[in-house]
Length: 105
Image 1 (cartoon, rainbow, N blue to C red):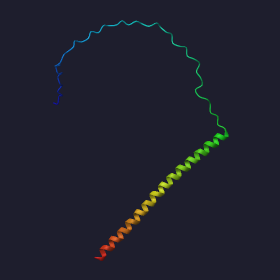
Image 2 (spheres, rainbow, N blue to C red):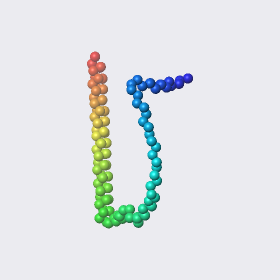
Image 3 (spheres, rainbow, N blue to C red):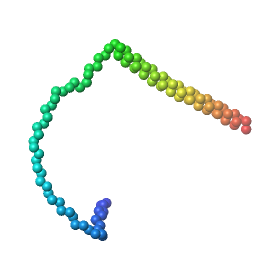
Image 4 (cartoon, rainbow, N blue to C red):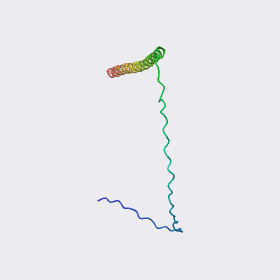
């Protein structure tokens, strides 16, 4: 039904150079080199030893991060709540103004 129309290659109009002749090359196998002998594996990483001081520092750092993130989240929630209350108060004031305006007429 819908068949694409394949364009034909246009014929060159200018000076045409004959194709270059490519000569085949011979493949010479290289001398066989034995694979290197693997060295003894080094330890991947040093062992981390937790001393009471480092454990205390990790716990203190984690506590500080939790407190800071909590303070930021609570302040954002408080900002949203204050904005919502102020919008509600504005809506009530506008509603009362519009209602009193219609009663005067």
